[in-house]
Amino acid sequence: MARLGEFWRRMVFSFRRSRMDRDLAEEIRDHLARKAEKNAASGMAADEARYAAQRQLGNSTLQQEQSRLSWGFPVLESLLQDVGYGMRGLRRAPGFSTVATLTLALGIGATTAIFSIVNAILLRPLPFKDSERLVHVWTKTPIFPDVNLGVSKPDFDDIRSQARSFEAMALYRNLPMNLSGAGEPEQLAGAGVTPGFLALLGIHPQQGRDFQADDERLKNGNVVLISHGLWQRKFGGDPNIAGRPVTLDQKPYTVAGVLPREFDLGYDALVPLTINDEEAKTRRDWLFSVYARLNRGTGLQVAQAELENISARLSAQYPKEDAGIHLKASLLQGETVENAKTGLTVLLGAVGFLLMIACANVSNLILARGTQRQREISVRAALGASRGRIIRQLMVESLLLALLGGGAGLFIAVFGIDGFKAFAPAEVPRLNELRVEPAIAWFGLVISSLAGILCGLAPALQTSRSDLVFALKDRIAGSVARGTPRSFLRSFLVVSEVALALVLLAGSAPHGAKPGADASRRSWLPHGPYPHRGGESAADTLLLRPSPPDVCAAFAG
Picture 1 (spheres, helix red, strand yellow):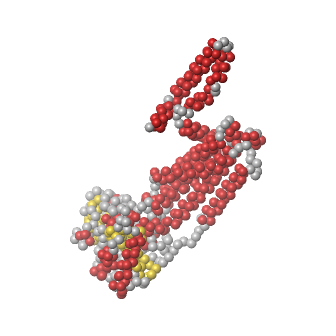
Picture 2 (cartoon, one colour):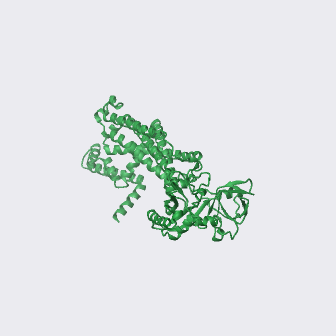
Picture 3 (cartoon, one colour):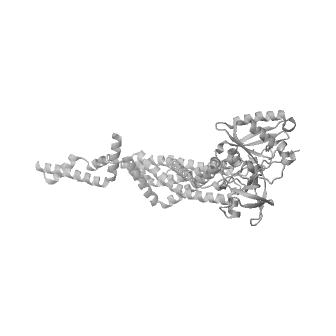
């Protein structure tokens, strides 16, 4: 309670500083006058009485400073003084301030922009309910050991009935369609899905309704869910689109609803999945992709062990069709970002090196400026400034410089992200989610602060270590002798810049491209269970969207 009262008293005094300064000065003058009158009454001359009173009272300036220490927040006030002094110093050196700010802005801006991209693509959860529990189930078979296949309908039924690790499961299959009767004909990227597909992902139609069990049996006729983009592009955002007839593949369909814009599945249209009798019985028709949601508290390893047991039972029960098969599960989040993870991680490391090069450059500039200010620093030390106070002043100036660079770097990051979105292939994962968020702005602030500390600490320690006798001489103040600690520090910074630049240069050398890793064919959600070559990651089942060769149909025999 006493501390709270002391804090409140200091807070009140801080807002009454000018008045209290006047009152203190008046009180000191009153004490001085009273002492002088008392001395004069004892027989001293007027001038001698006043001088004696001053000696008796002591150093009035020191007394005022000591009194002010109990009024407000001396550390904060001293820091504000350092900030004001640092800003005036930067204004007096516009060339140095501009070059240093732009250098830091380049490093901080590039780092912030790349971190924004990494955050949006790699770190941010997928825009689905409990996306960390979503998995993709696929099949490996001895017939094609290096190929990831989908799941047949009979195997899916067995998995759904036997597995206890999954809360829900759903099937889907690519189904390209041709839209006609609504302007120019257009080929759509479509898919057939089971009624629980959207519920599994936690998606609810923006307009209309979701698929129902009767839709799968065509009791309500042919129905279709269209994407928000198709709704806007072809139907002008008609609010009464639900129930409107459309023509797909020369067949009449009824629009059941519109998918929300924030859930970009990569499809223009979804229809209920229909499975014929042959597909429902043939275990070698690995035509379907399977999504599943893990139970809460169930890890991927537990689910994978259960799938291995089911694989063994299916192999024993159906040796002619399922002999040696292995059911695999992988997290959807990991599959989505796997192809982009290595490249973005390397790019983030590269801009980290760029930021360190920028910091080394700015450190050299600060060190060179410190050489010019050595006489000023020595005068301050001679007047009583401690080394800690001088270091704090120099560090405050470095932080101010870094914050200016961070502010400029934030603008560079915004334009950099816009440029990335403009020139990147449309199939880059989660491209539409890229933006500078408030959290990224805070990240830029943290990077700016760290850059300020990194840039200013070594020069501040070196500059504050001054020899007053030599620094105050004009012939020494403007130069640094070869072999001094400062010259060694500058040499070290130059060597560090060259070393970091060589690392960047070596890392930018072209390397062999990964087979099948055509960036123009990437998409951030699965587009079917088409097989891919061995040596590619399992995420290619998720991220590659090849022209449908219907290779799986060849496996059915």
